[in-house]
Image 1 (tube, rainbow, N blue to C red):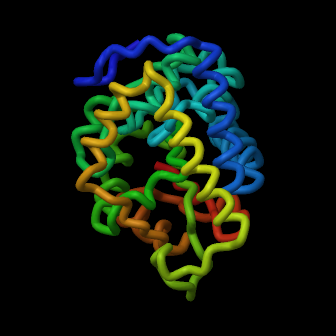
Image 2: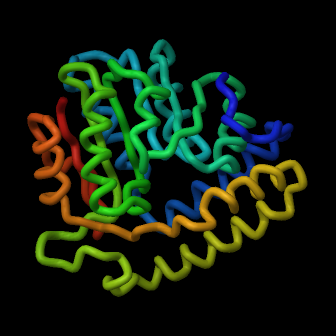
Length: 253
């Protein structure tokens, strides 16, 4: 398994890593109810395009690797890569998955991640990640990710994507009550992680990475993402899944 560039060695007990990943899944379910249904829909879509399981799949911004692991179980013969910028989440993924997938560091706000990820992927997934980027960076991302896909490959982007006509910044949207509870759970999760001695080195590295890069909180409707994807050279592009204000775009290379 690839190591995180510049990251200190992390020795994390697998049982401990699994426990924190399970808690992460509960937090994410608070933000995006029925997230498991998205994962099932995107896996079926990936299989439907070619009539077979993807040979190569790339999970961008994959965090601790929950979706990555599910894809690896569903498609045991596939070469699956996880990429994220967060050294803490990568440490959890590596501790739990123990080499079953390739885990790489990558910053989606710059084009350098493309060379590390490689090309010719049949499926690329980006779940709850693009809202960290600015509109200009998201536009550039669609150009970059197009180069990672094999002809006919599928890109699935899931994030906060309000219906057309609603404001395009998360800060201008009134949060749902359950989202306030999810924010509290998020803070509690990170507070707990801070007590794990083995994770203190990557936590320090994480703090340095994000010190001067707050999330852009960009949330455009599906129509905006579809238009930008087509400008980047994708063919078909449209909505694959919706749950309230969250949605997934599917685009075919």
